[in-house]
Amino acid sequence: MSDRRINIRVPVLARVEGEGALELNISNQQITRLQLKIFEPPRLFEKLLEGRHFSEVPDIVARICGICPVAYQMSAIHAFETLFHIDPGPWVRQMRRLFYCGEWLESHALHIHLLAAPDFFGYDSAPAMAKDYPDEIRRGLALQHIGNQILAFLGGRSVHPVGAKIGGFHHAPKQSDADALLQKLYDTLPLAEELITWVASFPLPDNEQAFTYVALRHPHDYPLNEGNILSSAGHNIAIADYAQHFIEHQEAHSTALYSLLDNQAYLVGPLARLNLNFDRLPNQVQTVLHSTGIRFPSQNMFHSVLARAGEIYFALQESIHQLEAYQAPKTPNVPVQPKAGMAYGCSEAPRGMLWHCYQVNEQGIIQQARIVPPTSQNQARMEQDLRQSIAELGLDKPEQQIRLHAEQVIRNYDPCISCATHFLDLRIHRQ
Image (cartoon, rainbow, N blue to C red):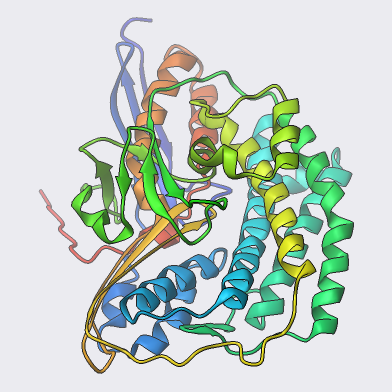
């Protein structure tokens, strides 16, 4: 067995958003090559934004992702409002948190039930799993649906919503619509507590690893779209100072840039958020998570699926909190006057921290744009995780078992590969 050689090729990763591949070579009980390949064509959104008026940006960047458009809108909107010194007021802040919760609900519910759960129960797809777990899949679809209803409530539609703007929202929903949505949230809330109990029963691998995790932290609230950038290594970074600490570089096998913090891989996403902000969760969410016997902060990446379930429970409670006090304002937005400068914004997409930077002239025209999505930030950590977890699994295991484990590790990060393909500097070396 000492000279056993395995060449694993996963040409298309299943049950992830976008197109990627994995290449893994094992020789003499050593991993000699491991590449998580992101080969989707660059979508060049940053370049497309150049020459556009700032008011166009939220609806353009929402098209980057059909699963997390709100995150792209909010990171951009907060960037411009900070530069333009705009305070849209408490109603807008409350509705933005509600809007963001809708996105977390639909994204996390989709990932847990349709993408991740089949891995833990040995099914190759969610439809196959649904034959034996119909109630669980129905619950997941119900949770996703309530998230979509929140998005439509404020965004006009659930996919690529168009309701948000710099300075607030284009319109305020009617009180009767808010009351109807609130009742649906009350009805859905018990499903979230059931979900945490179910996810905690998954046969989660015991796979502790040493890694740095990074997320926003707010002085009072569980982070959605405000705060400073904190890390488990002790960083406390202003959003405007992001580029001074996080450095991107290119690898030949990927059409997404790799991001490092102090020259090291790091984690963003629900586990990072929960690890750094567990004390910001409502008491009831903390209590239910504690009852599972799994403790946070955790260095086991497979606990990220439980972190998503916890954030679903949080998002429902937060949505109820915001709608219980709902009153339509006289106007849903405030006037906006552009000014020249650099605009920086950051928010917590379902998959992790999403940073935007825009150079704007006096007329409010975009001169340059830079977007750093969470999947590209996680790419180096994913490869690091694959090397360690496959080695711990055992390099002498059958090829099919190694392949399935590698795919499970990747899906655990819930990568949004289409979002990650933003870089502009394409270099091809041929021999």
